[in-house]
Amino acid sequence: MDDLLGFVSPPGCRLGRPLILKALTGSTNDDARALANAGAGHGTVVLADAQTAGRGRLGRAWSSPAGENLYLSVVWRAGLDAIEPPLLALGAGLAVSEALDGFTPTPTAVKWPNDVRHRGRKLAGLLAEAIYRGTQPSAVILGLGVNVRGAVMPEAIAEIATSLRIVRGDDPGRAAVLSSLLEHLDATLGRLCAEGFVAIRQRLIERCENIGARVSIGEVSGVAIDIDPTGALRVRDDQGVVHAVRAGEIR
Image (cartoon, rainbow, N blue to C red; front, side):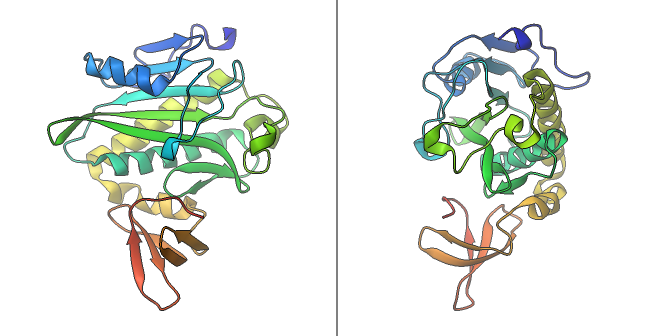
């Protein structure tokens, strides 16, 4: 954990002020949620060297060994009167992908809605959880897991996951990756909240690996053709009918 001690967010970045670093926790998302419920401000970050109960989308466990990867959660409060949490999650996936491009030999891609992959293998995942006061979200907890230092992936996920060290041949340093992540999240989500989804939609479409490919999501199968202005993945089935898919897991 020594490489993360004394970390300071990039100049001008609103995220990670404060940043709470833990050697071990159950889940950074749970910690950030508790802090948000207690009044923690926009941009508060919980960062852990290891997690015992890390989780990803759809309730899946997220392997979180010590000293290898980045496990963090951001309390996001800005612009929630204008941007719905699912769009914030899409924007976060885009921001993470663009940030990690600075550490990979070839560009990363987004698997809709927000997995980040490199050459078809998962490099980072994101879990967004909203906190509501009545019908209005008061905060969104953006949980990120980024595979950084692992030289060999666990056998159970070796065929579907990778790390920055594997794709580039060396360790880029967790602090450098964290700095880029916070900077890109702040800039991309800030623009999203200020200007709407239209401001980032084309960037996401160009980076989405599913566009033009055959996909199956729930009962819908066909070719993904684009992402609509609401963030839904538009899929044309074999009968030519276009479906707007708003949630689910691509198979």
